[in-house]
Image 1: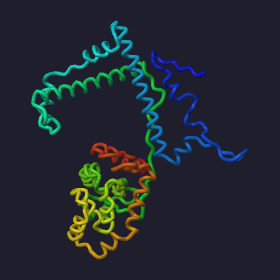
Image 2: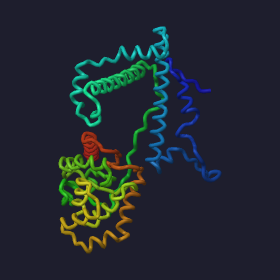
Image 3: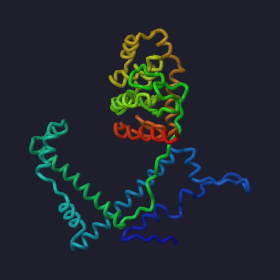
Length: 353
């Protein structure tokens, strides 16, 4: 029998989610006798890094959420005992005591948000009430956050498992990749760094995705700030419900040395119809006959599909998804997070010498 000791906390959590099962135990065997081999979850992780990480992450989030709710139940019951009242009244009294929202805070946020479209249907009095309620909700969240922080500091809540660390993924540069080394569309040749000496950023994206377009200005700034230090690769990942994404990326590939010009225009304008593509071809003086032949060629569509599959192979399920020297980041990543990842990659290269 396993016994777990913690200071006034639910050790049952650990038993429910761990029991006698660990990620190092055997999952299945192949063969017999001396030739028999036992496979563990670690073997799965080697072949299925992304999916295995998602399992571990979801497992931890489930445990973490359960633990926090269990601790809150315990905490409010203790408060009720101390104040000799009901749990509900104890909770309300504690939150009220520890959430103070000043008039100055309400005034400041009211002036900041009063003209937002979401508040258009309210008069000023109702807007102020909405702002006050929102500030109180934020303050209440802070109260709960502090409860957890104090619990862990005092060891009233002890987590017996840690959040998994996402692995680095192998996203090799392909012969078909279009590589960009600087902010201009013509920067398709190495500027300072070459090959693996550059920090390689592979972006799985498509121009009909709003978050992909939202992060485009950040990408432009990075290409300016790290010109000669990074190489940027865009891999097609057209989502099935974005019907103009694949035709646009096919057109970009058919633009040959104007690929990055097409991509930039697509992401900047969001104009992806056939008429927009035709106008773009004229703008960049593309040979229209060759261009149209290429667009109809099944090999071009197959290239887009292949690029998408390369993303699926490393766990990409949505756009945009970025790999900075193999480190995955998803969504409209802010500049600071991108910069930190690039600086970390540059430092790693410098350390290797």
